Image: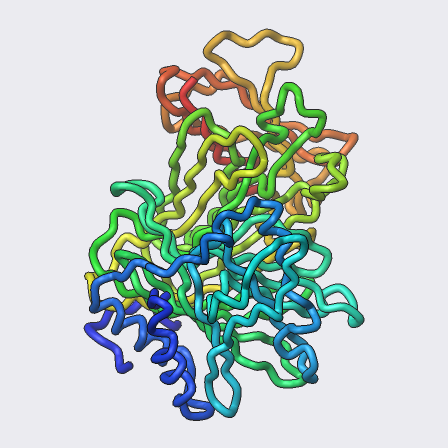
Amino acid sequence: MQITFQFSASYTSRIQKPFAFLGALLAACLCAPAGAFDFEDVAARAEEQAGKPYRVVDRKPPAELAALTYDQYRDIRFRPDHALWRTENVPFEMMFFHLGKFQTDPVLINEVTPSGVRHIRYRSSDFDYGQNKLSPQKWGDLGFAGFRAHYPLNNTGYKDELIVFLGASYFRALGAGQRWGLSARGLAIDTVGGKGEEFPRFSEFWLVKPAADAKTLTVYALLDSPRSSGAYQFDIQPGTETTVNVRARIFLREKVATLGLAPLTSMFFFGENQPHRTDFRPEVHDSDGLMVATGQGEWIWRPLLNPKSALTTSFSMRTLRGFGLMQRDRHFSSYEDPEATYELRPSAWVEPVGTWGPGRVELFQLPTPDETNDNIVAYWVPDQQPPPGQALDFAYRLRWQGKDMQRPPGGWVVQTRVGRGYAELAEDEQQFVVDFTGPSLDALKPDAEVKAVVTAPANGKIIESNAYRVDATGAWRMTVRVKQLKRNESTELRGFLQSGTDVLTETWSNILPPR
């Protein structure tokens, strides 16, 4: 078994440099010998910069770019016929994002070929500025805000958007037939705890030119922030399910409160478990739940919420098998939004490569007044973080999935609803209706005895629970009536279906925020 977490004193061998240093950086890139550049070169840069004080980006876009409105900025588009590798016989091509408005921190981008490494200069001729009246001839080599890769995902005649790196350490990808939804990040620091969240950023990228028959695109990235430095390798494999294999080496400049690995960021506005009173749409979200697979064999489903105030929960375990923010509901009728197409937005499933050791999956949920804000974050927090200056190595697979997504092997939750039926509920009571499906339930005999095993380990009392089959759908339904003992405290609920001694389903793990 490969041990992916490793601590060591040193290794042989997002730098944030003012644009005054572009010439020196370019010279360094151009002198790299052919075939010599790989992950270890980026890691050496990361270790070197970790030993120096953090330098704030002190070069911002020209004032005329910074003054653009949102719509004016959107009117700046990269010219597709100028895409990197467009005229060459390779399956991938690259396009770049312009600086301006919200994207004000420049990144350096390089190309790696058998001939060596070359810096990709910003050229105003690569962009269409639309109706904007600007003077790009005065700007020089601005750098870029980020980039996107294209690949023929859905048919051989057109190269679709495959993956985007844009802003801080954010990136997101698509599989065939999917639409843009949740995002991933390289690293999360003090999302909870500490004195405020720190957003590390990818400051430089290296794009490895693929061969004519390549099935994988490789990207290297250098990460930087006041308290971290890191090297990343992304091996991107497009398909019905696009897989991004991530290798990372992190150096901390100083200790942090919460080190979040493989972070995912999504949006949950409302859903069947938290319906909206006035919106005509039944549900609006990029993800409807957090799924966790522990190394001890338990599968957990936590329905997402749009809470009234910030809400942090976590799942501790000795080892992790995987976690993800999932979009399980794939029916158009659940959303009724032909423009947003929430039913086509991807799930993102993280699988550790090797052993990550003990730690916790942490879920942070924020209130949002609408669907324009990402208010959900999930990540892995190791019990041990490396001392400042030493390295933390880890690797994982990040799978961007559509209808055919990761599920537990037995049974899983297909919906969570809340509210009373005919009978009134007491003021301090709530009722949940949870439907399960899956092969373990399909295999039951018609006369099988199934029971709901429900507990309230924190601040709750189970008043009633039932389990029965819904003939109209074939699903098995669990109903739970719970009393919240202290209104000003959260209540945890756990429930699953069981037949005899056989556990049939994942664990439905729900939280009732303070009322």
